[in-house]
Length: 212
Image 1 (spheres, rainbow, N blue to C red):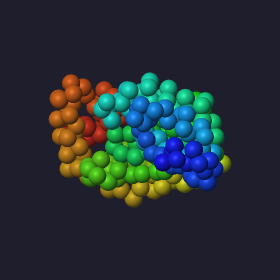
Image 2 (image 1 turned 180 degrees about the vertical axis):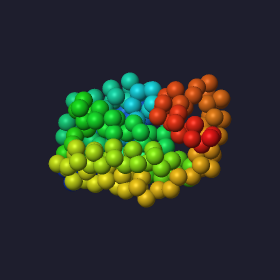
Image 3 (image 1 turned 90 degrees about the horizontal axis):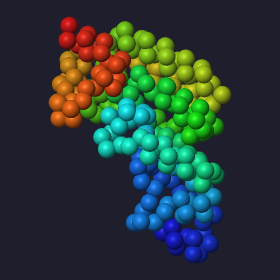
Image 4 (image 1 turned 90 degrees about the vertical axis):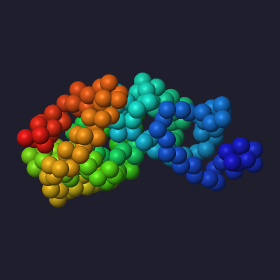
């Protein structure tokens, strides 16, 4: 389709929208950046939830340096593209997501003039942030309300943080759910030879609460 639109000079009549994990910028050995440069109406959604080792832990097989370089390549080669993220907020990233979002903004990888497509994890059910202990949800709610205000210049970003804060405020701690989360991750940790609490130290207190 891309070649058809280019060959028939129709690139200004279509809007391209992509959702990608940014691990590859090629399609059938063809450079997507070369195609995208020719389409003035282009939206790209990066399915990213965290950065660095944290990102590599959440989505096994991720190579964060490659992901970040691909983001930079798009910003440089296709500056007209609307580039944003479509994160899923879960037990695995709720503590660190605000810092991740700041990192993307501060490093010019996304713009604060556009807004993410926000998602809350509901499956598996024990990944839902609403089952966190009351004390953790209250602390996180305050953090997300702080970020609601920090990004008040963009109502969509602000409302995204507000939505997460509301989900936290309306949750109910569930020790059994946290125990299921721990069991699930312990099995993965054993198989992968790593530990979740080493990557996400904020979960140490949650683990201790669930085991008390």
